[in-house]
Length: 204
Image (cartoon, rainbow, N blue to C red; front, top):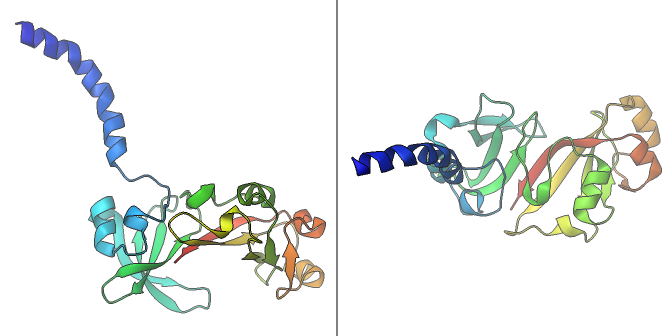
């Protein structure tokens, strides 16, 4: 009788603990350059961490329009989608690139997230950085972290960013900026375009 009473008394506490304990075991939506996102990881390790039903292996489109085979986490959920490209495509091993794009809510190393502004990225970098002027798609890309905090990430990986503006037309941007020229993120003209992060590339 006493054991039954103790079990009944503890039951609510056990129910409350079950959630947090499960959450500790479940993978988070933060990319770290270690663990199953380490350079020497593999498709199999991702399957073990995220469950085979949440990952597929398919072709994705690279910036130049070519197709690249990649492991895709949560392919049917835009907010949780994540692409992992492999150096060894045959064995699906050794991470080459991790891509956060679209509507993904994944957080990259050091707190980088889609939708962040120039000012927010500068704060993470602890200083202004350099980027190439806007292309025909109104996208500027980071060209140099200029020795800031984002130049070296824990785990020996690198962060690349694309920032897109929707304020000015492509024609107006082309006349004001050269896609091949570097600009400082603190440049008033660049700030006036109010670009935000549209894609994050984490490479090894």
